[in-house]
Length: 181
Image 1 (cartoon, rainbow, N blue to C red):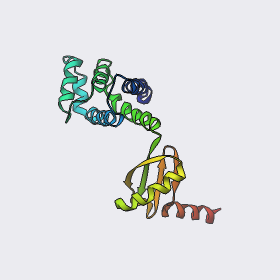
Image 2 (spheres, rainbow, N blue to C red):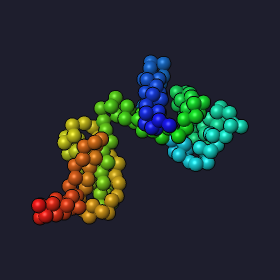
Image 3 (cartoon, rainbow, N blue to C red):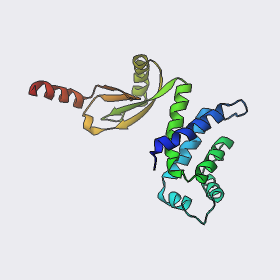
Image 4 (spheres, one colour):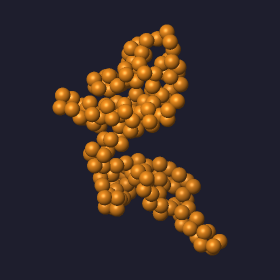
């Protein structure tokens, strides 16, 4: 089977183009949230087995998935779900959502910054850190914080494939390299 990212790319591009059209009034953030909700359902093993049941039509599986959502998604997301189910690609839905986020971020000229910290960061600390990171990386950023006690202290920041590591762990590793060289 082809890698999920390869399978997901055309679906993500198609829905992105569909919601960008003049006839569609679904904001990108709303579509992204709806895709995330469907991706969460698609990760569930019971839902995956349900979609693989030959006795259930794709339309029926789609109805069941849509009924599990807190609100009805826009037409573009509903149509995407139906096409994904008809093509037996439910497993690719999380990758479709991830690639849609990348397309949305590019269109909005922003990016997600993953801030890894050894300790919980207060919202004020994040608000103080973001402007400096935006200047450093040259774009608008929105933060996601992850805890990693192995860092000991400091933070590791990732924006796409760029990494800024100011953690105590990185400094200790650098010292070890210097001392053993």
